[in-house]
Amino acid sequence: MDVSAVARWRVVCLLMLGAFLGLSGVVYAVGLLPGDVAVHGEILEARGTLAHAAARWFDYGGKWVVLGPAMLAVFAWSPIARRHWWLWCALMPVGGAIEQLFKFLVGRPRPRGVHWGFPSGHGGPAWA
Image (cartoon, rainbow, N blue to C red; front, top):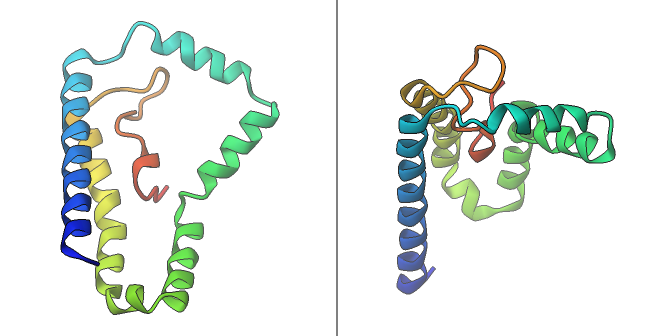
């Protein structure tokens, strides 16, 4: 990868990190929004639809039983990934740990239930 491509990726990653940290600060300051319960109710009413079934399948793709074999397939296919295997293997659990840490720090509850709702596991590996 050339130097300019690396610089572009670095800028994109830093912008995304800044957006995540900024959004985390907003969610920490505001907490549960008034419309969250209503939107959650609308989503629950959509259960049984094709869109809901597709969303559940996509959600399953972020779990360890899919991510682990997918990572092994990437190793088998890509010599570059095999060269950096240690980085892949470290980022998988570290990403999940950072997600859980931010959930604890932000402390934003789900519209219903006792679990924390932000950030979503969909931004990184979901180990549940």
